[in-house]
Amino acid sequence: MSEAVEQVDTQAPTKADGREPPYRLLNLSDVLAMPSPTWVVDGVIPGSGVAVIFGQPNAGKTFITLDMALHVAHGVEWFGRRTQQRPVVYVGLEGVGGIGNRLKGLMLARWPDLIVKKPALSNNDSEDMPMHFLLGESFRFALEDDQDTHRLIAAVSEMAIEKPLFIIDTLALAIAGNENDNEVMAAVARQANHLSAATNGTVILLHHPNKGNENDMRGGSALRGAVDAAILISGDKDKGRAWTMTKTRDGEVGTGGAFDLVPVTLDDASSDKSAVTTCAVRERLDRNPAVATRNEPTGANQKKLLDIMRAQFPNGCTEPQLVEAWRAKLPEDKRRRAKQDVKAALTKLVPNWLQRCADGSLKVA
Image (cartoon, rainbow, N blue to C red; front, side, top):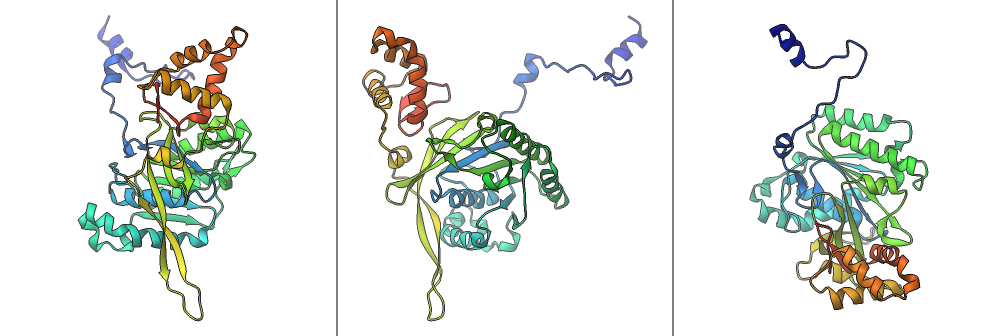
């Protein structure tokens, strides 16, 4: 082979002939040398991509997300997990009038804890806080129109905001179309991932649960399959509240943390005005988040499956092992449905009663 030919072969492919250049295939050493996944919050929020935080109305989604944002903005440990300091961009589409009071309450209650973990914050001024807000303006993920996504990318670029943590509150108000339409939800996933990729950031979507299954997010399955992480917010003031990982690509499903929402008074009542109150997050390290917030299984199959796990697999098992144990207890004419019955019951038992580990195995919570 001549030197001239060698030079031509080693040059980068071009589109001179009108065709796309060939794909560049990586070898094993290339893949092994790739950097490990990074986290905004260790094991919870990935360093890039899209996450969903979902839960019933008044479960505390916005409070716990803003609390996380406050810690991330300053690189302070959150629920015992390291954070990577990132600027926060909060897109508020509902309840924007009360966002200021919510932040004041969180800062008033949490600032002493932040300072203990990071003493340099003691002289921090809110003007220097790396948090930015888009409030009172329309923002939509539209099926055939990426205009709002591009506008947000441009705003971040103009302010030189690097690797932002975006919070879209709430997804329901950011959807232009029917959330049960998979084509619509696929467009949401595509644009949210584009927002992440174009800014080297991470996008958190605040969402609501499925009416028939509070452990799953609402709407078409296209979004559920596309997100990198999903965090369920559950419980109430009587049982206690918790956040629990229901999906993660690189962490462990079923992990989480317990918390309370404690009242905070911003302004005392006077003769001419009512007291101004809000809430703040208080971590509860003394409480198991799964046990504190879970509801008793109601379905017959759920109860039977939980009994099998406790009796036969106290140290955990794989899903196929659980299916076989379930099948052995069925009449012969019903054994064909074993796999289907187990999968249906697991959707209601994970993560509050059963936890799915990183390797896919199951264990009693």
